[in-house]
Amino acid sequence: MEKEIKMPRLREEMKEGVLCAWLKEEGESFKKGEPLYEIETDKVVNQVEAEEDGVLEKQLVEEGDVVPCGEKIGEVRVDE
Amino acid sequence: MIYVETGSTDVYYNFGLEYYFTVEKRMPEPVFLFWQTTPTLMIGKYQNTREEIDLNYAAANGIRVVRRLSGGGTIYTDEGGWQYSFITQSGQENGASSNEIDFRKYLDPVLGALRGLGVPAEFNGRNDLTAGGRKFSGTAQYKLSGATVHHGSLLVDTDVEAMVRSTTVDPEKLISKGIRSVKSRVCNLAEFLPKDVTPQKFKDLMVAAILGESGSVYTVTEEDDRRIRELADEKFRSWDAVFGHDPKFEIVQKNRFPGGGSLRAELNVKKGRIEQIWLTGDFFSAADIRKLEEDLRGVVFRREDVLDVLREGLQGGGIMGITPEQVADTIIG
Image (cartoon, rainbow over all chains, first blue to last red; front, side):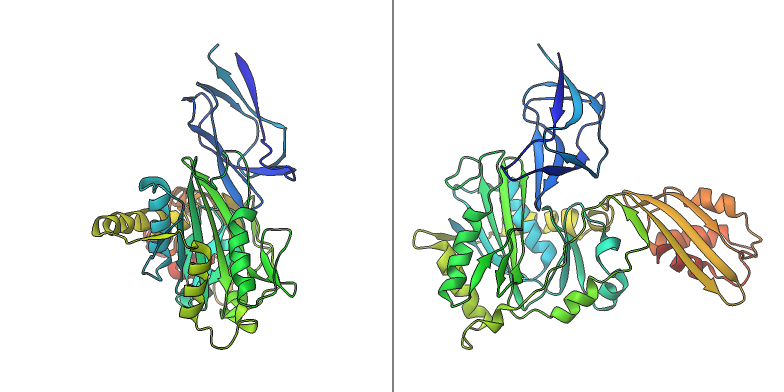
């Protein structure tokens, strides 16, 4: 099943975050709990972890891009 | 809460220790550190060293450069100030839930301790602490492997002139997507503290106030120390840890040499290495410059590495009136 990954909102006032680093390449598989990417907002660097097993299909934003919360940043394929 | 005395003013060691208690030695309660550094520039995790720091000034004045694991901007620290770290494992009381940012619970005890010493301390909107509208403390966080680290700085009697001088750089030279620092008006807490509060006394009062009555103290063992030194060297002290992690950037460097002409170097640098370079100008070269550009691709963006390639490529004639050293200085800037 294809799923979108979106820039998370880490607190109420957060409007956007910087996608600092992809920790998985396109086509790379991951397990639940493994970090997928790293974001920075308000002086906090946060690794965002996978919620289930899957494969990172697409990286839709580049490292260093500023992305509004809720906007699509990538696509993953997860097991049914 | 458990207090750990770092016993060091070496920033690389102290960050190694912080990392050790974050990822490797997980304690049953939150860990608290209160430490100092020799003159040091701490850049945020996704900042560009060249965009934030006058690297030549730092090198000439023995100021260390370190890349933090947390976000935000560049700060200058020295033995006139203090750093603190709170390390919390997930599930611990006061531990942040996995997807939530909360600075206040860490800052409240710090603020309370300072007010107890008579400092009119307040929060500002960027989670900094201020007095009279000027900042004396910056804070940042990172979350790693289920742990949250909140750390901050306190300016007490820091050399503000060195701070300003070392963080003033020519803004036009570089294009990158790194996080930029926000400049603030700063003040030293010494302005507000009673005269009899020495640095040691300040530390003792702060540690006691933050640790509270139920706190305990853990002493670093020889085994801890051995591993901390390894982490310090690998994750913080190495050239790669500092400069190899600069976000990719483009830079144009120019120089003019009497008797040699002008030299312009345009570069793309990624992961601390030259990805592409174009050398142009009105100089006269007996060497094949296109070949030299090829040879420089993939080379570490550091003077000695670049100079090795230039010496090789410019053998037998080279560039008239411009030495390989001068070319290297132009490229590195």
